[in-house]
Amino acid sequence: PTVNYFDNEISIDYLLSIEEMFFLDEILKESKTVMEIGAAFGRLPHSILQNFENIERYIIVDLDVVLQLAKLYLSKVLNKKDFSKIEFVSNNDIDTIDSLEGRGSIDISINIDSFQEIEESIVLDYLEFISKNSNYFYTKNAICKYHPNSVDIKLKSKTQMEAVLNMGLCKDIIDIFDSNAIQKARLKYLINFCPKNFKIFKQEPCFGQYLYYYSALYK
Image 1 (tube, rainbow, N blue to C red):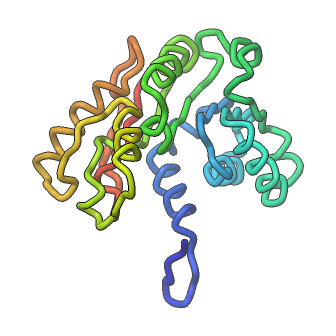
Image 2: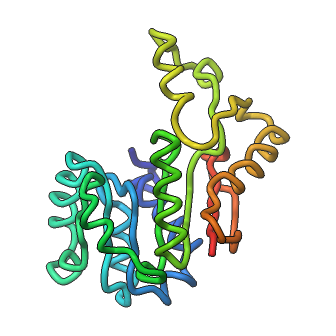
């Protein structure tokens, strides 16, 4: 999807990348190794590698089918030098993930809009890995669940709703148009997504229609 800004079609995906890079600018300028869990088609690695020449290694961990999409897209939009900095790691490739271990081996780990779609036990495993191997952790995820009727979505089956409610770390159903409910959910979110022995370093609400998302950087 795009927005028209004075006759310029601008990708919403890349507007989100700009928001994230502004938030992380200070840390990214000092980083050499980035790990992103769930990079989708690759909008953020594309953005970061083109704007931060100091990044030497960008590790993407994702589902095999998604990695194929990211490889295809990033190979077309990045030059050979920047594309060569990327390591594509399957979420099932335990040996490769284990080889990344070592305190400080990763400058910053990133997860955007996917930990809330993964089983809780798997998210906790990722957070444990991050706590042992990364200096920073950035999360930008939904802080809650909401009823689909509140945004005019009609589900055909209750099992769809039940499946969604079982995913992620923040499972409370709230009114996403209630600022008091949003504030309470943010506090729970900051606790739930904090890796062991990390502390909140920086935080801010997200923009536009994403008010029930929250950016948090832990150190």
